[in-house]
Length: 159
Image (cartoon, rainbow, N blue to C red):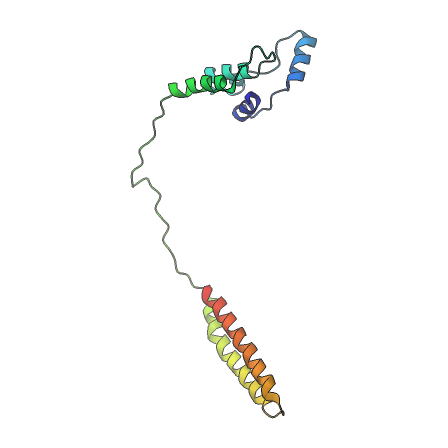
């Protein structure tokens, strides 16, 4: 939990515990983990100390429970007084005006499409009228064209 919070606050992934133990023993140096406050000076000292303790190499130096860690972080949070700015109706964003913009291409298509489809329908009816038993074919074509007209008009009226 401490490493996750450290990463979130600093933007740096801390070295894992094995690397930290190996480096500190082999070089005889201190823990290679940089304090969060050195990486991000805006981090409060209380939070930095809580992170250092949560990420201590020795389990005896760490918090015994998450509750203890949380309580130390909450001490800092309760010390802070946050002043929220007052928002007036003048500061609130105004809704954008609705604009009814009809595409001119669709209005032209509607005006041209209906006469063309009616002419095609008439040609089909007249063309099949001289064939024996063509009324069945013309009825089927009328049904298909009617369905096509309904679909086209419903699509054009939605836009």
